[in-house]
Amino acid sequence: MKLGLIGYPLGHSWSPAIHRFFLKEDCYKKYELKEEDLESFLRDTDLDGFNVTIPYKQKVMLYLDEIDEVAKEIGAVNTVVKKDGILKGYNTDYTGFLTMLKSNGIEAAGKHFALLGDGGASLAVQAALKTLGASFDIVKRRKKEGVITFEEMYENAAAYDGLINATPVGMSPAKKDTPADLSKFPSLESVVDVVANPLRTRLLFEAGLLGLKTCGGFEMLVRQALAADEYFLGKPMDESMVQPCMNALLKDRRNIVLIGMPTSGKSAIARRISKATDRKLIEMDQIIEERLGTSIRECFETRGEAYFRGLESELAEEIGAEGAVVSCGGGVVKKEDNMRALSADGLVFWIDRDIDNLFASGDRPLSSRRADLERLFEERHALYEAYSDFRIDNNGTLNEAVSAILETIGEKA
Image (tube, rainbow, N blue to C red; front, side):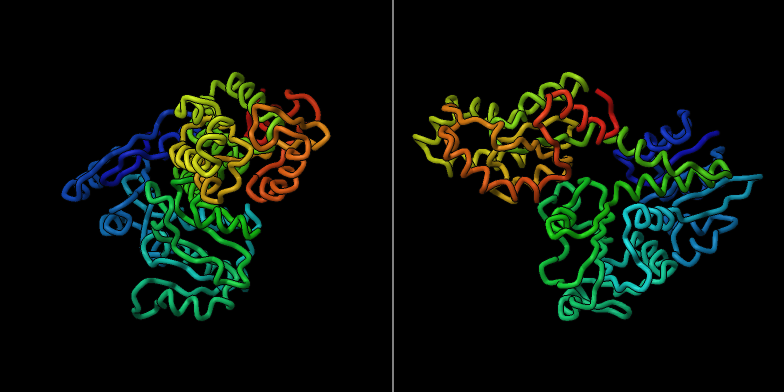
């Protein structure tokens, strides 16, 4: 079988790796096409099937022999199958969105959504919401027929059960941007963002802090690829492959971020994970000390805590998506922006150890005495809980904690 992806420009794409995982063979290539070459490629191609991305999801429809009814309704095609010389188009963005909502327990039937954007991604989402029996308002900056403005959305904010971002706002490198102010919505139950890079947009991070159900574009991308392979192969695919595929692809990108109290075991666990998985180790406090040329305690004494926290925030923003294991200082949770940055391409684990098993240390300026340690524990406990994706009990052995983390991300120690 010979498959591929067409678009222009293509640059980095997850598609070859995703399809390689699902199909268990290296049969999927990228084909970067300029617009003047699109028609001849479609006429002469020897591919058995291919996916279509920007800017050809609508233009390709002009050259197809048949188009699936759902794709016709959406007005865009992202999957094409060639059989007996006939090119037939489908839209699996629609399927990927449907199955993503279901897998994350997001109810849509009878719910009312604010849908940000009206581009290609929005068209697939609109069709899916109609299928699920949901209602929605399309929201854009400027008023036009069938669209409301952001001001109108906020005026009617209490009417929305969910919000879906189908715009590129918040996409890397503009990771600090967010398309909507969630604090204005009193009744939201869920937030969905079709942006796949970063893995967790600022919008999803803020939704998580509010306790809302969330899911994002990377999962949708993987699920639409699984649906495309069903068309390519002409048979059902096993949905249980989705999470293992995501874990495999994220191993070199998603950071393992460890937060917790001083002396909770973060550094020791990070070193063991780094060694067991061959991941880069990032010790935030150690890096800051190297940049200072002195100890953190001396920094606190000579320059103050605020200076140190500034360096800590700078480093949190610098850490990229590199599949590293990141051991954070105990106070990193004091600034929400730190955790937003670390969560963008990281899975956050709270290393929780009972207060009786923690100890004061002269090396740590804020917990050099037992009374100070107990005060920090009371101050930060709720922050660790709020910012973490998973809590890891570290009152047993270090190996037990390491195993729990690796099991969570689909790996073995």
